[in-house]
Image (cartoon, rainbow, N blue to C red):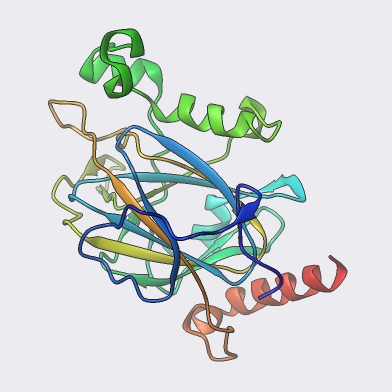
Length: 261
Protein backbone atom coordinates (compact mmCIF):
# COMPACT_ATOMS: atom_id res chain seq x y z
CA UNK A 1 0.00 0.00 0.00
CA UNK A 2 1.29 3.48 -0.85
CA UNK A 3 1.65 5.65 2.24
CA UNK A 4 -0.50 5.70 5.35
CA UNK A 5 -4.30 5.39 5.17
CA UNK A 6 -5.92 8.75 5.80
CA UNK A 7 -8.85 9.55 8.04
CA UNK A 8 -9.99 13.12 7.29
CA UNK A 9 -6.36 14.05 6.71
CA UNK A 10 -4.83 12.37 9.80
CA UNK A 11 -3.36 8.92 10.48
CA UNK A 12 -6.03 6.42 11.43
CA UNK A 13 -6.10 5.50 15.11
CA UNK A 14 -8.05 2.84 16.98
CA UNK A 15 -11.43 4.09 18.09
CA UNK A 16 -13.24 3.34 21.30
CA UNK A 17 -16.59 2.11 19.96
CA UNK A 18 -16.51 -1.47 18.67
CA UNK A 19 -19.32 -2.77 16.43
CA UNK A 20 -20.95 -5.68 18.24
CA UNK A 21 -20.46 -9.24 17.02
CA UNK A 22 -17.64 -8.48 14.57
CA UNK A 23 -13.99 -9.61 14.44
CA UNK A 24 -11.47 -6.97 15.50
CA UNK A 25 -8.30 -8.60 14.08
CA UNK A 26 -6.04 -6.19 12.16
CA UNK A 27 -8.49 -3.32 12.60
CA UNK A 28 -6.81 0.09 12.57
CA UNK A 29 -9.86 2.19 13.28
CA UNK A 30 -13.47 1.38 14.12
CA UNK A 31 -16.58 3.20 15.24
CA UNK A 32 -20.37 3.20 14.88
CA UNK A 33 -22.44 5.67 12.87
CA UNK A 34 -25.82 6.29 14.53
CA UNK A 35 -28.92 5.91 12.39
CA UNK A 36 -29.82 9.06 10.48
CA UNK A 37 -26.25 10.38 10.43
CA UNK A 38 -23.56 11.06 7.81
CA UNK A 39 -19.79 10.85 7.42
CA UNK A 40 -17.05 11.10 4.78
CA UNK A 41 -13.37 10.22 4.55
CA UNK A 42 -10.57 9.62 2.07
CA UNK A 43 -8.73 6.31 1.77
CA UNK A 44 -5.75 5.15 -0.27
CA UNK A 45 -5.54 2.05 -2.41
CA UNK A 46 -5.04 -1.00 -0.23
CA UNK A 47 -7.46 -0.01 2.54
CA UNK A 48 -10.37 -2.28 3.52
CA UNK A 49 -13.65 -0.90 4.85
CA UNK A 50 -16.00 -3.31 6.59
CA UNK A 51 -19.54 -2.07 7.18
CA UNK A 52 -21.64 -3.83 9.85
CA UNK A 53 -25.42 -3.71 10.31
CA UNK A 54 -25.31 -3.65 14.12
CA UNK A 55 -28.99 -4.24 14.90
CA UNK A 56 -30.30 -5.52 11.57
CA UNK A 57 -32.60 -3.68 9.17
CA UNK A 58 -30.00 -0.98 8.52
CA UNK A 59 -29.14 0.99 5.41
CA UNK A 60 -25.80 2.55 4.53
CA UNK A 61 -25.93 4.73 1.42
CA UNK A 62 -22.60 5.43 -0.30
CA UNK A 63 -21.14 7.67 -2.99
CA UNK A 64 -17.52 7.60 -4.21
CA UNK A 65 -15.29 10.18 -5.92
CA UNK A 66 -11.68 10.52 -7.04
CA UNK A 67 -10.25 13.00 -4.50
CA UNK A 68 -7.69 14.22 -7.07
CA UNK A 69 -10.41 14.83 -9.67
CA UNK A 70 -13.96 14.82 -8.22
CA UNK A 71 -15.40 14.86 -11.75
CA UNK A 72 -14.60 11.15 -11.67
CA UNK A 73 -17.30 9.52 -9.58
CA UNK A 74 -19.19 6.30 -8.92
CA UNK A 75 -21.11 5.09 -11.98
CA UNK A 76 -23.65 2.45 -10.96
CA UNK A 77 -25.21 1.98 -14.42
CA UNK A 78 -21.79 0.97 -15.80
CA UNK A 79 -21.07 -1.06 -12.64
CA UNK A 80 -24.20 -3.16 -13.10
CA UNK A 81 -24.09 -3.34 -16.89
CA UNK A 82 -20.50 -4.50 -17.28
CA UNK A 83 -20.94 -7.19 -14.62
CA UNK A 84 -24.36 -8.33 -15.89
CA UNK A 85 -26.09 -7.93 -12.53
CA UNK A 86 -28.90 -6.06 -10.78
CA UNK A 87 -27.56 -6.63 -7.27
CA UNK A 88 -24.13 -6.20 -5.69
CA UNK A 89 -22.29 -8.87 -3.69
CA UNK A 90 -18.83 -10.41 -3.25
CA UNK A 91 -16.83 -10.67 -6.46
CA UNK A 92 -18.27 -7.44 -7.85
CA UNK A 93 -16.42 -4.14 -8.31
CA UNK A 94 -17.67 -0.55 -8.10
CA UNK A 95 -16.67 1.41 -11.21
CA UNK A 96 -16.02 5.08 -11.82
CA UNK A 97 -17.35 6.83 -14.91
CA UNK A 98 -13.82 6.65 -16.36
CA UNK A 99 -13.69 2.86 -16.39
CA UNK A 100 -11.59 2.51 -13.25
CA UNK A 101 -12.42 0.52 -10.11
CA UNK A 102 -12.95 2.41 -6.87
CA UNK A 103 -13.33 -0.72 -4.76
CA UNK A 104 -14.00 -4.44 -4.84
CA UNK A 105 -16.46 -6.35 -2.67
CA UNK A 106 -14.26 -9.01 -1.07
CA UNK A 107 -16.61 -10.30 1.66
CA UNK A 108 -20.39 -10.26 1.99
CA UNK A 109 -22.72 -11.93 4.47
CA UNK A 110 -25.96 -11.14 2.63
CA UNK A 111 -25.49 -11.73 -1.09
CA UNK A 112 -27.58 -8.74 -2.13
CA UNK A 113 -27.16 -4.97 -1.85
CA UNK A 114 -29.32 -2.44 -3.68
CA UNK A 115 -27.86 -0.31 -6.47
CA UNK A 116 -31.02 0.90 -8.19
CA UNK A 117 -33.20 2.87 -5.76
CA UNK A 118 -31.30 6.08 -4.99
CA UNK A 119 -31.78 7.89 -1.69
CA UNK A 120 -34.58 9.48 0.30
CA UNK A 121 -35.19 13.25 0.31
CA UNK A 122 -36.93 15.68 2.66
CA UNK A 123 -40.29 15.35 0.92
CA UNK A 124 -40.37 11.54 1.04
CA UNK A 125 -39.25 11.45 4.70
CA UNK A 126 -41.85 14.02 5.74
CA UNK A 127 -44.57 12.17 3.84
CA UNK A 128 -43.77 8.81 5.45
CA UNK A 129 -42.68 9.74 8.96
CA UNK A 130 -43.55 13.38 9.48
CA UNK A 131 -41.38 16.47 9.82
CA UNK A 132 -39.32 16.39 13.02
CA UNK A 133 -36.73 19.16 13.30
CA UNK A 134 -33.50 19.40 15.27
CA UNK A 135 -35.08 22.09 17.43
CA UNK A 136 -37.80 19.61 18.40
CA UNK A 137 -35.81 16.38 18.78
CA UNK A 138 -32.11 17.33 18.78
CA UNK A 139 -30.06 14.46 17.34
CA UNK A 140 -33.16 12.29 16.88
CA UNK A 141 -34.62 14.60 14.25
CA UNK A 142 -35.73 13.14 10.91
CA UNK A 143 -32.78 13.49 8.56
CA UNK A 144 -32.93 12.56 4.88
CA UNK A 145 -30.33 11.11 2.57
CA UNK A 146 -30.17 13.87 -0.01
CA UNK A 147 -29.46 16.58 2.55
CA UNK A 148 -26.95 14.38 4.37
CA UNK A 149 -25.07 13.79 1.14
CA UNK A 150 -25.10 17.54 0.43
CA UNK A 151 -23.65 18.36 3.86
CA UNK A 152 -20.73 15.98 3.30
CA UNK A 153 -20.18 16.97 -0.34
CA UNK A 154 -20.01 20.62 0.68
CA UNK A 155 -16.92 19.89 2.77
CA UNK A 156 -15.04 19.21 -0.48
CA UNK A 157 -16.45 22.01 -2.60
CA UNK A 158 -19.03 19.73 -4.21
CA UNK A 159 -22.79 20.15 -4.42
CA UNK A 160 -26.02 19.29 -6.23
CA UNK A 161 -24.45 19.03 -9.65
CA UNK A 162 -22.05 16.39 -8.30
CA UNK A 163 -24.75 13.89 -7.29
CA UNK A 164 -24.64 10.40 -8.75
CA UNK A 165 -26.59 7.20 -8.16
CA UNK A 166 -25.70 5.67 -4.79
CA UNK A 167 -25.35 2.16 -3.37
CA UNK A 168 -27.62 1.13 -0.49
CA UNK A 169 -25.65 -1.43 1.52
CA UNK A 170 -27.73 -3.96 3.51
CA UNK A 171 -30.93 -3.18 1.55
CA UNK A 172 -32.60 -5.47 -0.97
CA UNK A 173 -35.14 -4.45 -3.57
CA UNK A 174 -36.77 -7.03 -5.86
CA UNK A 175 -38.10 -6.15 -9.31
CA UNK A 176 -41.21 -7.83 -10.73
CA UNK A 177 -41.70 -8.67 -14.41
CA UNK A 178 -43.66 -5.43 -14.89
CA UNK A 179 -40.84 -3.37 -13.34
CA UNK A 180 -42.50 -2.87 -9.94
CA UNK A 181 -39.86 -2.61 -7.23
CA UNK A 182 -40.51 -3.95 -3.72
CA UNK A 183 -38.44 -3.53 -0.56
CA UNK A 184 -37.51 -6.71 1.35
CA UNK A 185 -37.98 -5.74 5.00
CA UNK A 186 -36.30 -8.70 6.73
CA UNK A 187 -33.24 -8.91 4.45
CA UNK A 188 -30.39 -7.84 6.76
CA UNK A 189 -29.80 -9.43 10.15
CA UNK A 190 -27.89 -8.16 13.22
CA UNK A 191 -24.13 -8.35 12.72
CA UNK A 192 -24.26 -8.79 8.93
CA UNK A 193 -21.26 -7.26 7.19
CA UNK A 194 -19.82 -6.34 3.82
CA UNK A 195 -16.13 -5.62 3.18
CA UNK A 196 -14.82 -3.30 0.48
CA UNK A 197 -11.19 -3.25 -0.67
CA UNK A 198 -10.24 0.05 -2.26
CA UNK A 199 -8.26 -0.19 -5.47
CA UNK A 200 -7.51 3.53 -5.91
CA UNK A 201 -7.61 6.66 -3.73
CA UNK A 202 -11.28 7.31 -3.02
CA UNK A 203 -13.40 9.93 -1.30
CA UNK A 204 -16.18 7.94 0.40
CA UNK A 205 -19.43 9.66 1.38
CA UNK A 206 -21.87 7.78 3.64
CA UNK A 207 -25.19 8.28 5.35
CA UNK A 208 -27.36 6.00 7.49
CA UNK A 209 -30.79 7.44 6.65
CA UNK A 210 -33.66 5.10 5.71
CA UNK A 211 -33.86 3.41 2.32
CA UNK A 212 -36.35 5.37 0.15
CA UNK A 213 -38.64 2.32 -0.20
CA UNK A 214 -38.58 1.27 3.45
CA UNK A 215 -42.25 0.80 4.52
CA UNK A 216 -41.58 0.99 8.29
CA UNK A 217 -44.40 2.82 10.15
CA UNK A 218 -41.78 4.58 12.30
CA UNK A 219 -38.61 6.36 11.18
CA UNK A 220 -36.04 3.51 11.08
CA UNK A 221 -32.91 4.62 12.92
CA UNK A 222 -30.41 1.75 12.64
CA UNK A 223 -26.70 2.14 13.52
CA UNK A 224 -23.99 1.03 11.11
CA UNK A 225 -20.55 0.02 12.36
CA UNK A 226 -17.39 0.40 10.32
CA UNK A 227 -13.87 -0.97 10.56
CA UNK A 228 -10.79 0.12 8.60
CA UNK A 229 -7.84 -2.21 8.01
CA UNK A 230 -5.00 -2.82 5.57
CA UNK A 231 -5.65 -5.27 2.72
CA UNK A 232 -3.30 -7.91 1.38
CA UNK A 233 -1.79 -7.34 -2.04
CA UNK A 234 -4.22 -8.18 -4.86
CA UNK A 235 -3.30 -11.51 -6.47
CA UNK A 236 -3.49 -12.18 -10.19
CA UNK A 237 -6.24 -14.75 -9.55
CA UNK A 238 -8.16 -12.51 -7.14
CA UNK A 239 -11.89 -13.40 -7.41
CA UNK A 240 -12.91 -9.79 -8.07
CA UNK A 241 -10.26 -9.38 -10.78
CA UNK A 242 -11.16 -12.58 -12.65
CA UNK A 243 -14.95 -12.74 -12.13
CA UNK A 244 -15.49 -10.83 -15.39
CA UNK A 245 -13.23 -9.95 -18.33
CA UNK A 246 -14.41 -6.37 -17.82
CA UNK A 247 -13.01 -6.39 -14.29
CA UNK A 248 -9.59 -7.44 -15.57
CA UNK A 249 -9.63 -4.42 -17.87
CA UNK A 250 -10.78 -2.23 -14.99
CA UNK A 251 -7.82 -3.32 -12.86
CA UNK A 252 -5.51 -2.58 -15.80
CA UNK A 253 -7.01 0.92 -16.09
CA UNK A 254 -6.23 1.40 -12.38
CA UNK A 255 -2.66 0.23 -12.94
CA UNK A 256 -2.15 2.68 -15.81
CA UNK A 257 -3.65 5.48 -13.71
CA UNK A 258 -1.30 4.71 -10.81
CA UNK A 259 1.71 4.83 -13.14
CA UNK A 260 0.86 8.41 -14.04
CA UNK A 261 -0.20 9.58 -10.56
